[in-house]
Image 1 (cartoon, rainbow, N blue to C red):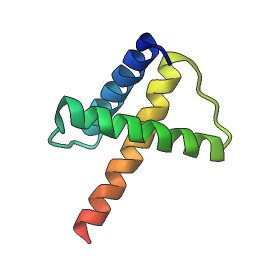
Image 2: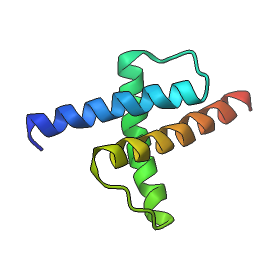
Image 3: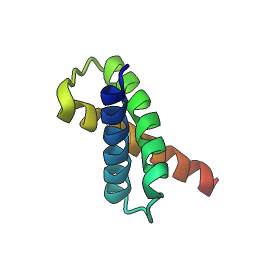
Length: 83
């Protein structure tokens, strides 16, 4: 992965984490927190999309996949925190 690919990956992670926080009405995690949630969400979303046979390609597909994964991740964290 070159520097441009890494930059795009981090931007997608930040956007996905931010979107997931907005969708779930969170208080925000900051730039680094959003990147971490978005990157972990991208991995989780990619796994979930693969399990369900959904294909998402391109920049928008990557953002959607990462956002869905980040929403699932934040939902799991909220459930665990309540328990």
